[in-house]
Structures are given as C-alpha cells and as structure tokens.
Picture 1 (cartoon, rainbow, N blue to C red):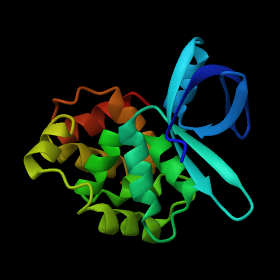
Picture 2: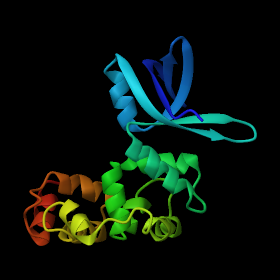
Picture 3: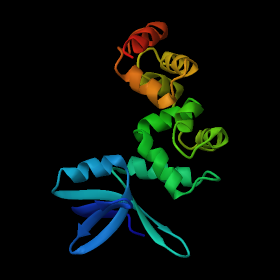
Picture 4: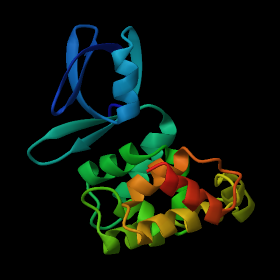
Length: 190
C-alpha cells in the first residue's frame, strides 16, 4: 500500500496531479486542497490511498490524514466507489462533512454531483456511528446560532437556490445574526 508520497508537482492532467518522487512520476487523483498546495511549487507531501482493481491501480491523494480517513469511511457505504468518495471529500473540509453526517444533513451531500437523495441518506445513516461527534461539539462547530444555519440555508433552497448557492450566499453574511435576518441579507446580496 502506498500511504504517503513526497515530491514536487510535475504537472496536471484531467486525471489528476503528476507528482515527481525522486524521478518517478505518480499520477494522483487529488482533492482540490492538494491541487492548491501543488500550485505553490516546492516539495509537497500527499497522503494517499491505492485503489486496486482487476484492470487498474489508481492513487487518490489527500491534503491530510483526516481527508483520507473520511474517504476510507465513505468507501464502506454501499454504492459509493472511489470516484464518488473523492467528489464528496473534495466538496467541503472534512470537519464540515463530519458535522453534516453527525447532524443528519442529507442536503449537503445531495448538492454533490453523482449523489442523489437515497445515496445521501445512506451516507448519513451508515456513517453516523463511525464519525459521531458529541452533540455539544456539533452545535458549537455550526456557524452562528447552531442549527439556525441550516434553517437559513433550507429557506434559501425553498426559494429556488441550490444548496451550494445557498451556502455560498450565507458565507458572506454575518453568522451571528438570527436565521431570518441571514436569509434577508443573503437575498439582498443577490
């Protein structure tokens, strides 16, 4: 198993990042956080997972061990393969994804291409025990007034925004405001 690579970015392709490790080029399907670090140049350390299939060996790269652990947990969910798991891990920081699982936020996962309602529900159901956060920690980690963030986001979704658009609009609004005021400000920013 190849668990970590350290080298320099030698290029990018549609299939991923080409990482030069002592003269050997490894093609790594990587998360956006790894790709951003690769743009800086210099030496780069990538946590990896080697997926072995009958007809291929594919390396997946992560910025840290938390991303890799979440990826591996996603692979245990029925119907989730490495490409979809990489898309999930690439969608948001691993702490936010773990919080979404702990709080049963299916909509966060439905916003990711390739994941429908049933798959999102299965992710939450099958991983809730594995990534459990104490309720106080989950509430403290949610921006602003705790679950009110989800109330504001869901209100924007009901008004026709996608989950990703709603999250983006709410990111520019003061998280300390009540949910109703956050929705108003997000709509004004439109």
